[in-house]
Length: 143
Image (cartoon, rainbow, N blue to C red; front, side):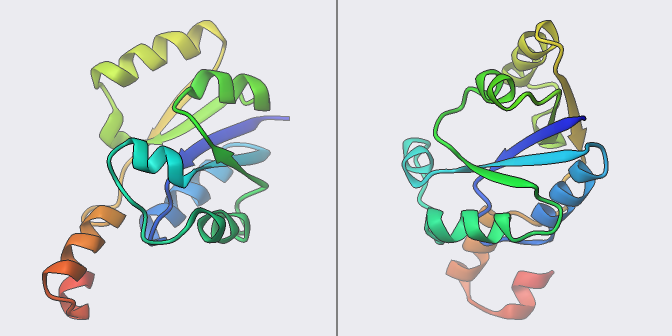
């Protein structure tokens, strides 16, 4: 059985999130999703709009997700080992960054493969928050 793992805040769930989960599930038998806790989000200097309990329930309810778990830290290697995941799925905005080049080395030594998926352009929770704060017009948010 191929177990895949991906993580995210999943705040203001949008089509980019859905594509990540759908594409990830297509490449594994069991998809486990780590949902970033409120404490970890705030540690990164951000604050989610939707509370953790609601975000994890939304993710858990997605038909592509077999198991949703709290993500309490940034240690992807430990999470993959604990869950017996052999694939880690991430957005390609991290591809070839210093941080993820190091992750690739660590994960490869453990036999864990990273698969990068293209992000959906102009779709991010951060972008949606900025647009809502700017003018709140639905037509501007969708563009």
